[in-house]
Each structure stands twice: as C-alpha cells, then as structure tokens.
Amino acid sequence: MIIRFARHGQPALEGMPKGANHEFPPHDYVLSPLGRKQAAFLGEHLKKIGFCGKVISSPYVRTVETASIAAGICGLDIYLEPRIQEMRFYEEPPCPGMKLEELRAAFPNIAADAVLAYPWMTPGGAEVLDTVRARVDKYVEELIADPPADDVLLFGHGASLQSLKWNFYERSGYTGKDHHNWNCSMSTFEVDRSGKAKMIEIARYDFMPLEYVTSNKRLFGDPECV
Figure 1: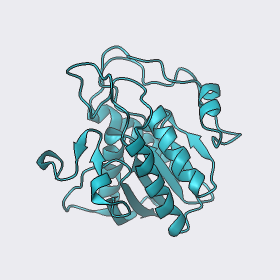
Figure 2: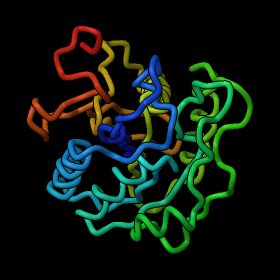
Figure 3: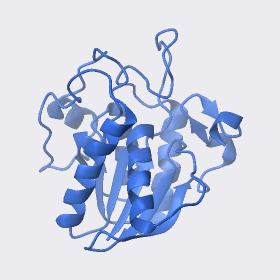
Figure 4: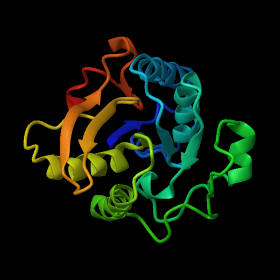
C-alpha cells in the first residue's frame, strides 16, 4: 500500500486574535485564495501521477477544503478522520467545528458513506506533540492492519503530519534530515502488511512555483522553516 499525506493549503487568517500562533490557528478557517491555488496545484500533480486512491481528511474546514479541491480534480470523493486533526493548542476550544451535514453542504464530494461522530474535536485541554503522536500512531496501526483496497492520501495539519512522518521514519529506518511541512506539501511511503515502510518522498512541494510555497503566514525561505 502507498500512503501519502499532505498538509492543508494556506488558511485565510484575517482576524486571527492578537498574539495567536499562526501555525496553530485558533478557529476553523477556510482557505485563502492562495491556499485554494496550492490545493489545485496538488490536485493537478495527483492527476498527473494517476492517483485514484482513497482520500481521507481531518474534519477541519481548511483540510476538508484542500482535500475537496485536490480530490475533485481527480474525480474522487473524500472521507473524514478526526484522529488526524490539528493539535489542540488551546485549553478551551475556540470553535465547535462543523457537523457532517454542514460539511456536506459546503463540500459535495464528501463520500455518501462518510461518517463523522459529533463533537469530533479532541476532548480535554491543550495537547502536546506526544499526545498527537499517540492518536496518529493508533490510527496508522489500524490502517495497516485493515488497509483499503486502494492507496491512501491523508490530509492533515502541521502537528498530525509531523506525527505521521515520525511514525514512518521509524518504520523505514530513515535517520536523515527532516523537512518542513509546507502548505500542500506531500510525503509518500510504501508500507507492507508487516508495517515496514519504504520512503519515496518527504514534504514534496516542487509541483507548485516557489512563490506559492508557504507555511501558513511564513514564506518559503524563512530561516525558521528551512
């Protein structure tokens, strides 16, 4: 099975509370115009390589919108998985998240048999990366134990994608340099039924022009992201 995972496109962060961390936006933001273009570049790349697998997204609007655009270009439906949602960075949830019916109204290519229990946001207070890693690891174990018939593409966030990378670094024995999770960048691993993985690419973004590459508000070339 080939497992791909991509970060959402750049969100529209206008009106974000003063002092909030743009890498962990506190609300359920839609994509910016640039974010929609990034998603389209990713979709065209997926179409070019002939991707026709199962598309699974975090239920946040920015991930579902990214998945909807990219999958739509390939003529594919999308499914939802709360365990690959963003790290809960705040003690109190700043927004409730959308219900399945609301998401379907906004994104018609959510699969007819998709399910989403509500509320789906991670319960409790603020998370740390180890907590995110634990829920992502459990999901990966289930995915490998009972793989879908097709290859898989997961749409997540900086924290959940980093957890996915750490999981598959260990499975593949990779000990080289890490790469930043740019908006709409995609990592790809081949994994067998035993759980062993082979790395194909990490955080690839060369299917879009460099001037379109961002990390939410950060631009490509920012030394904090190299």
